[in-house]
Length: 241
Image (cartoon, rainbow, N blue to C red; front, side):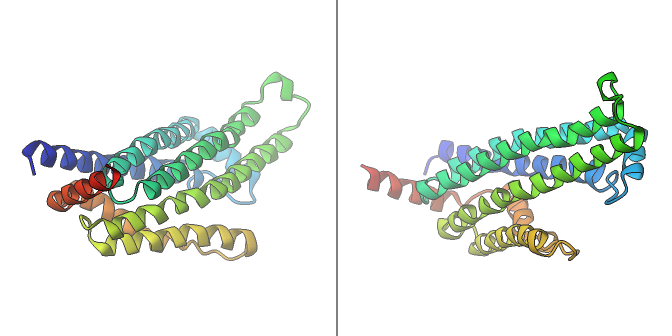
C-alpha cells in the first residue's frame, strides 16, 4: 500500500462526504424555503401571497434545487470511483439511477418556475382573472410535487445498489449498507403511500434517512479502510486480467 494510494482514496472519500453535505444543504434549502414555507395546500390565494411577498426567496429555492442536482452528479461519480472495485455492474446501476433522477428533477423544475409566470401577470395572460391565475400557479406547484415524487422513485432506488456495495465492500461498516437499503425502502414507501392513500399524512423517509446521514459523516470523518480498499481493488484487477 503506497502513501499516494492512501492519500488519493481518502481525498476522494472526503470530497464525496463534502458533496453529500452540500446536497443535503441545497435540498433542505429548496424544501424549506419553498415547498414547506410558501405552498399552502388547497389555498391558492395564500400560496400566491407567500410567493409574491418573498419572490427572491422563491427564486433562491429554485436555484438551490438546481445546484443540488449538479452536486448530486459529482457525488455519485465520486462514490463510483470508491465502490467500483466491489462490483462494477452495481456501481454503474447506482450512477444510472442518479442520472435518471436528476434529469427528471431538472425537467420537473419547470412546473415550479411556471408559478412565477402566472403570478407575474404578463400581458398575454390578461384573459385570466386574478383568482384563475392563482389557481393555475397552485396547480403547477402541485404538479411539481407529484413530479418530485415520481423522481423520488429513483432517488430511492440509487440507495439500493449503494447499500449493497457498502455492505459487501469490507472497507465500510456493514451496518451502513443495511441502513441505506432501509432508506431506499422509505423513499419508495412514500411514493406508494401518496399514490394509494393520499389522505394519509405520513412521510416514512423522515425516519429512514439515517443511513444517508451516517454515510455522510463517515465519509467526512473516517473515510475508507484503505488497506481493505486496496485489497479489493487488486482482487478486481486480477479477475479482470
